[in-house]
Image (cartoon, rainbow, N blue to C red):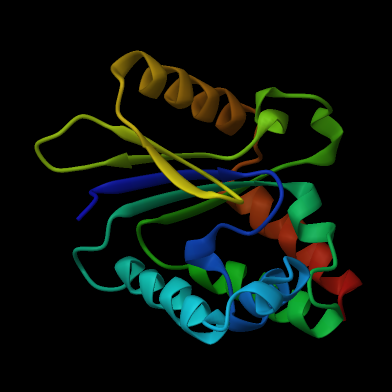
Length: 176
């Protein structure tokens, strides 16, 4: 199991923090029900992975999202309200840090796409990149170093966790 997970998402809430309604809305918009009769199983698999954040031995989880993620109406008002409330609740847990890169930052290295890094016991950090075709583990040291640098520069642009939660609360009012 990973000892820490660092995840930056410019387009969606990170999978480990998504609510069932949010996951369902993402799968619907992707048109997956037209191509795969296992949509419910895929939703369950994604939600089951979230158990990694529970318990005393959970990894440290550092999630950074672009403010646009909070503003994008995925699934409608009720889904977004539930999702943002869930983010606030998760940020109150130990070992979970949620930060937001505010829209006022303008262009920054994260606009090029998501970044995920996992620290594994006894191993160096590995990267993970996901797209429409699936995920790819990045373990070439120079490539992992580039992903780590990108994550660090993105996180440097983000608000503190307290300020990020305050921003999430303000955006939540929009979804009321």
